[in-house]
Structure formats: C-alpha cells, structure tokens
Length: 148
Length: 148
Length: 148
Length: 148
View 1 (cartoon, rainbow over the protein chains, first blue to last red):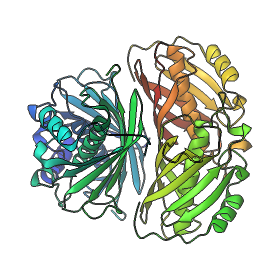
View 2: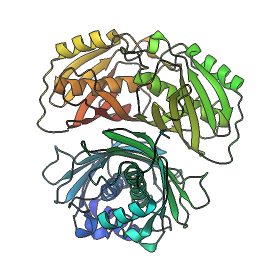
View 3: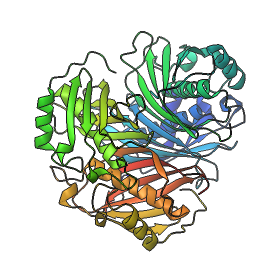
C-alpha cells in the first residue's frame, strides 16, 4: 500500500456523498452497500446480499462483484482527495477466485498509488469472516481531473 | 480471432437459454439485452438503455458495461460449445475509453482461443453506428468444466 | 480501432528513434526487432527469433513477448504523436494463448484511444502466416506527458 | 492471501530447479535473480540491477520487471506444488506505479488461489527498503497441468 496517505473524508462524509450522488450507480439501491471503515490508504465496504443480486445457484453475480469493487476503489480515492465527482475508472481487472457464499460481501480497497493524474489500487472481496480466502481480487486505475 | 470456429447454437437457441437460465444475471431484466448475431467465433449483443442503468450525468454505468461484456463473452463461448451452464469467468479486464452516449450499447464478442479448459476472448462495446470509436474494450477468460 | 488517426512518423523515423533511444530496452540487441509497417492507428513489428530469447523447449519466453508487445504499443503511439520519449507504460495486460513456434514473431499494435493524457491500445502477437491463431493478446495503457 | 498453504520446496530446492531449468528464461543470466525467502503462500526474490537491464535514464526496463514478476509467480506456485515444469502463465496484468531506483529490485509473490487447474497470485515489486512504495503491482494466472 502506498505510504504517507491520510484520509480527509469521514465515513459519514462518504456515505452522504454516495447517497446523494449515486443512488443507483451500482445497479441496485444504495442501501445495499455501506461504507464501514476508512483508514490511511484504505476503505472497507459492505454489500448486503439480497435476492436482487443473486444469480441462479445462489451466489452473487459477477457484475455485482465488479460494481462493488469499483465502488470501493472510488471510495478509497475520494476519501483521500475529497469528493471529486469527475474521477473516472480507466481500467479494472478482476480475478474471480472462488464462489461467494450467501453471507454479506466485504470489499477492502487499498491505494497502491495516488498520483496527480492517476490513482491505482487493489480491492479484495471476501465473505464476512473469510478474509484469508477471498472470492475475488481486483486492481483498478482511476483518472483524476486536473486542477481539482 | 481464433480460426476454424463454427457456432453450434443459433440466436434463438441462445436467447432461449439466457431467458431461462439468467433472468437477472446482469443486474437487470433480461429483456434489456438481446442477442442479435452469431457468427464463426463471434456474437453481437444489444443492450437497450433504460433509466434503470443510467447514472447521474446520463451515461451507462461501469458495472452495466462490465455485465454486458461478461454476457457477450459467455454467449460467444456457449454458441461454440453448447449450453454449458458451469462455464465460469475467471478473469475480466476492461479499459474504459470514452463516455458512452444515450443510444443502445452494442457488444461484439470474439473468441481469441477456445481450448478444452480455457476460453479467451475480447469484447468491444460501442454505441450504435460508432463501431470505430468504442466506449470500452474487454478481454476475458472463462474456465470450462471437464468432461462436458 | 480509434477513428480519424493519421501517423506523423514514417517507418524510417521510428527505426531511427528506437535505434538511438533504446538499444537494449527489450532485453536484447535492437537488431532483433524491426518496425515493418505503419498505418492509421496501427504498426507492425517483427521480432527475429534467436537463441538469446529462446527458453528450454524452444519457444520464445514470456518476457520476450511482453517486451515486444510493449515495444509495439510505444511505437504505435509515437507514430501518431511524434517522438515523446517520456510517454510511459502504466498498465499492460497479456493473455498467453498458445505456444509460439520457432518462426519470427510479429506484433500488430492498434490504438483503441489516443487521448491527451492517456493512450490505450491492443497488440496481437502471432507467428508469420498465422495471424488468425495469435500466440498472445495484449492491452496496454500509456500515460502521455502534458504540454508535449 | 489464500489460507492453509504450506510450501513443499525449500529455497535451495527452488534455486537448484531454476538454475537447471531456466538459465536464460528471464532474458538474462540467472545469477541476476536470487530466491531469498519461501513461506506459506509466499516467496521473495531479488533481482540484482546490472547494466544489462538498465534503459537510458537509468531505471530497470518494463520487460525486466514483467520477467521478474513472472519468475516470482512461477516460484511461489512451484514452492507449493513441487517442480512442475509444465505450469504455464495464462495471464499477467501489471500496473507500473513509479520509476524504480537503481537499487536491487525485490519481488514478493503471494498466492491468492491454488486450485487444481489454475493458480492466481499477486506480485509486488519494490526497491530494497521501500516496500510501502512499490514500483509495480502484478496479478497473474498460471494453468497447472492435470494429473501432476
């Protein structure tokens, strides 16, 4: 994880930002996702599992996982640069590791680099209590608008 | 694109398979996506734009694009190996190239390799009539179950 | 491929640039790689196979293929923006598709997007005469310095 | 990192395997890379910096970093499944984070999943003493031959 990072938004700040700006950005009601922790270079987000994002066979769908990872990346960047609505994803790479269980999904996002123009991070997706056996791993790059 | 490929499912076959197996696999009603063409090593899928998958600012959300690309990859694989419900995505890498317009999104999936255990392909996402200026490009790998 | 692109460097320009700037950038003498064609949004590069880049079993090594793809991406960008030595790779994603043969390797690089700050492209690696059965597929992003 | 992993090869085992099997696999003499540590789900490899892998401007080349990361992935897999020369890279995704310094490069490889058919891991590349500011981050997938 990149060193020397200090968040400038609180959990409450981020929750308020997302509730207002992205009611449906993740293909589902925002009540389904909850920002739980913010730390230096890191955020933790919870995705409540509901019928709406289950696929036959009963696991969370790939797009739901990709959306959650993108949300975690966006959150960890905003937490450190402030609410820059124009930051956009330029790349997202996901490796699906194992079938998620029916518990809530947690996404831990960590910044690998926070530059002036680009932010790079990784996100680990895991079911509650199974952090050592992640269901998916994501790396992603965001482009940050100039003169923010 | 990999050579020597011949589809063994028709557009009607695939539409019926997805309507039955994945009513909500893409985080939205399946009527929103329509398989339009199947050819050697290739499929074309349409995603109708609706309020449900728009984000503020009016473009299609990243998760919607990732879900559409995953759908196109799955469709081009099934079209060539038959309905193998257990084929699973192992990797998806997406580069977001430009902001999509409000028209329908088309996804052209092409197989780069169709092996016994792994299938690799690329998907180009573009607004109707703008194939030369794609909004996103995806590469993805699927794991194919043995003894299919 | 992105539309409306016109190269501003010739094959001779690029050969001269690489011969001077990167005698060993690819982990081998530059005589081993040769820029063969430049077109709108596209370059073709040849990698002569030599003992120095063969691994036991006799195929080209992965790092050799990744270096060749990176070279093709850099070349197709420079061909369209001029010799900007400070353009740097920010991401490279490679899918290895099949074992290369002992013939020369060709790399066709195509621009998917050429923006002010970022360029995104794909590179297909194939043995001569086997363009339809590529040995590897690459997508890559370069960061372009401001005020070039 | 995946849980429940125990290495079955020692540092000496792996050094002997690579010295014999891949004298030039990384585009340079194997003396330049040294396996330093093996632990549960993890390896640490050192790449000595030499003139041969420096590019103008004096940093390690991208292909050198990609080769080192691939070496670390292969090493961490073999350390846990034994010397399976036929395990092959199917995907490698690298994010270049900052310009490496002239010190030796260290690569820490960690397994995210070790399945029967696929192994997925991540590799962090950093200059000695700067683990918190990595120069590059890699995720990679290997295909493992059946009936090993």
